[in-house]
Length: 199
Image (cartoon, rainbow, N blue to C red; front, side):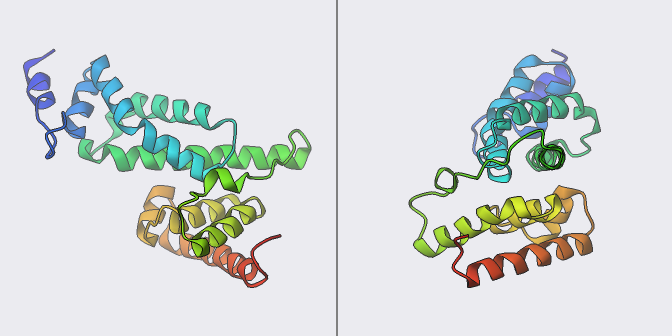
């Protein structure tokens, strides 16, 4: 390993728990397999969780996670802020899920796959307050009816708790487009909640 890569890789995170994301990215760019594995271990759970919340119950979530890491590691040279690896891989996850959801919607229209209802009990924590559980049940039952961008924006807002500007950045859309998509989704969700949330 070159000295400058070794020195950066020895830079610790503030918590002292290991090399910083920036150091791992620099080492991974230099072809260090251990750094690539460390990035995977650090972010696999986050990517898997985000993919699962965007595509609950989808049997392809594991494949999506692998695809996300392959894309990210192949494109590390395009990451301008190595310290922002977490946010960057989150946006790759969102865009990859978007493509898969659009492809699945097309297959449904063509009759190539069957619509499988979301098992909301597998997605919603039993420790969540009853009002939150009710809202999430309504939201997850509504998702398949929404256009893909509206669906993703709603999950990022209601489940991930992102602000509008963060959603726009993560989805690669303008703030105005995100507002329109989210307003449409929120209106449908409000209507669903007004009639009891269970349809």
